[in-house]
Length: 207
Image (cartoon, rainbow, N blue to C red; front, side, top):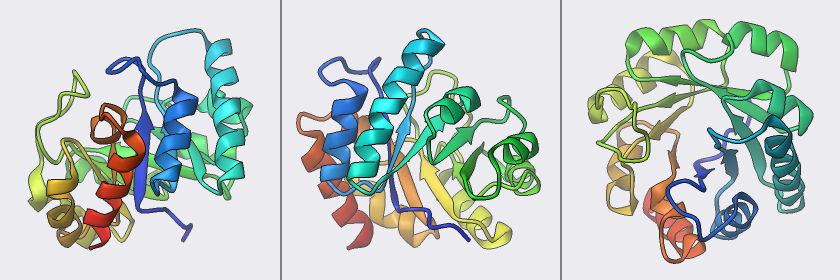
């Protein structure tokens, strides 16, 4: 099983505009994040690849991992450590065939059936959520709650990275429910001090 770090920070420049993707990556890693996920829905593919390459250089220097959200082509071009794919994105099994056995592939799930699809697709971890109500994703699925974290963690034998509405106040109960770790957007990127926010979240997770 690959080493899937505990704290994943998804970079975002739509919910906030103070920091670039590269700046958010640097700050989150300084705060203790082990995985940075480049998340950008709009813009040219060429620009995404350029940004992702810059982020990969940052992550390599700081010994963190870079995962690309949704875009297998960008992940390949940037030589990222992996890709995270939703249920309607590039097929998981085909992504594994293209990327090879050593790259990290995560799959999104919001229920048991989707978690099963992730397992069958050969993912390294399941991104499960939303656990709580979230404003970071306009088309988020219904909230699954801590019970869904418990069930998927118990029944599928894969690391569960919980996502959706998670903050430092909720981190401990998410981990106690069986999550391997958590992925956040606004809890780090939209805070006044992203580095401090990441550090507080990591302490809450591991404390």
